[in-house]
Image (cartoon, rainbow, N blue to C red; front, side, top):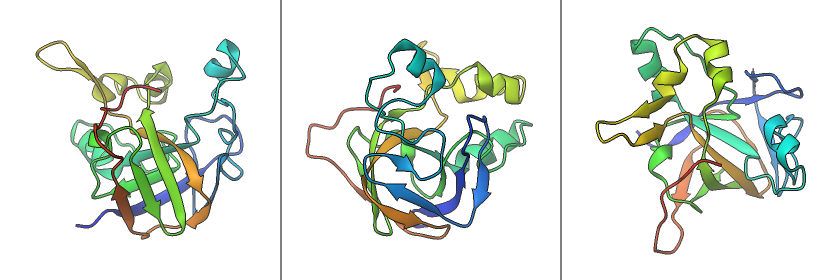
Length: 179
């Protein structure tokens, strides 16, 4: 299966889940038009409280639909947009991308900046869900599975079904960490 957009989502307010829509408009240097998290500086409330002038490395949130399927097999029914993502993808291993990977979606380009930091709001949404998206392996290493964050490098409209092409950055590649 080739990488593609499964669905797109937006919320003009700081709600946990986002509404599914037929298309979203990505705006270079800003994020998703009409989304509460769009802006050149941080928009996530906890980060605004810490330092409102930091650059917004979380303009676009992407989650792979395969995670939602996996969560379903553990008894958690989670649909597209319900974990707050703007773009739900299919056929791409988002978590294994390096920092700086460029995702070409139609005319738009999103540069991957890091992993989403899962927080208590995920348990507020569904009790026990945080442990499913924030796991420790046998060596004690924590794995963040709740998708990736990115910034918009080129504006464009994104719709379900659009192909996603990955352009890797020059080597050396650096693993994603939380942003």
